[in-house]
Image 1 (cartoon, rainbow, N blue to C red):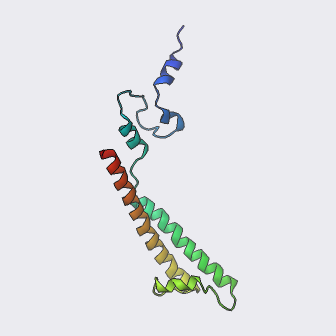
Image 2 (cartoon, helix red, strand yellow):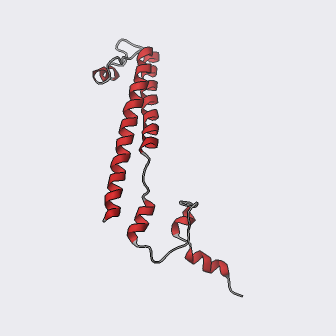
Image 3 (cartoon, rainbow, N blue to C red):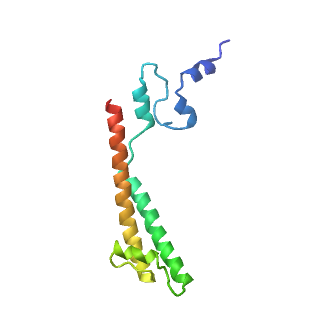
Length: 130
């Protein structure tokens, strides 16, 4: 009796075992060249999603850092963090400044994440065009 499972496992693409791309066809095609496999492995990033994630993280980080320094108190509260007012008009190390910092951090993080995703997609596009 022939073991059909052993024959099937040899035809399954390696990424199917790792759980990546499980929703796609996973039969191994010997005719697929390395460039196509590389393109499949390096999918395009969504600039909006990356920007949203980095925006929320950076906004919440600035918000939290500002509030921690306000709660901590002291003679020179947030002397170094207060230098951000040079880049973010209206920001200060106060409770109100933490809200302003949340907005500035979110917008700046979103723009950085979107730009990073655009650069990544451009490089992947150049590599797949070769």
